[in-house]
Structure formats: structure tokens, C-alpha cells
Image (cartoon, rainbow, N blue to C red):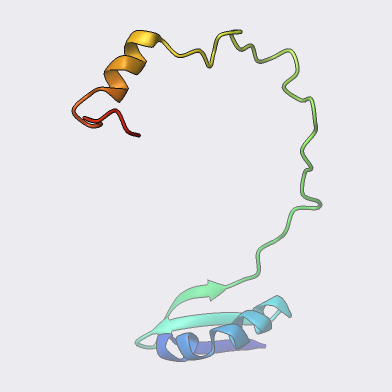
Length: 88
């Protein structure tokens, strides 16, 4: 069975139209009597992929000093016009 609705009806009854589409009904939404769109359910993937721990092992390298702070840059940052009192 095909369900036809204009845009106003579709806005008013959207959850009912979604339920009908999920049950296999064909839902057509029209504007000024002309069909515009067909409402269809999304086909879900078989199973969501789970994250695999250790997948990046051996593929990523970080320098031992990656979080070290350069004294000159820190001095410029904290004592700049943005933070005139040195308060962060």
C-alpha cells in the first residue's frame, strides 16, 4: 500500500510516516500535488565494527620530548599583550 502525504501532513505526522516506512509501506511526500520524495528506511550494516585495541601499534611514533615546552616560546606566550600580568 502506498501512503501519500503533502508536506504539511508530513510535518504533522512524521513519526507515523516513519513507522509506516519501517513496516514496509511506501511513503510518498508531495508538494502542490506533485511527488517530491519517497521515505524509505535505512538499511543498517550487518554489525557495527568494534574498535580493535593495538591496531596502530608500530604505525605511530612520538618523539620522547613531544610535550616539552620551549622556554622562549612559553615566555613570549605568557608575557605577551594577551596575558599582560602573566596570569593564565
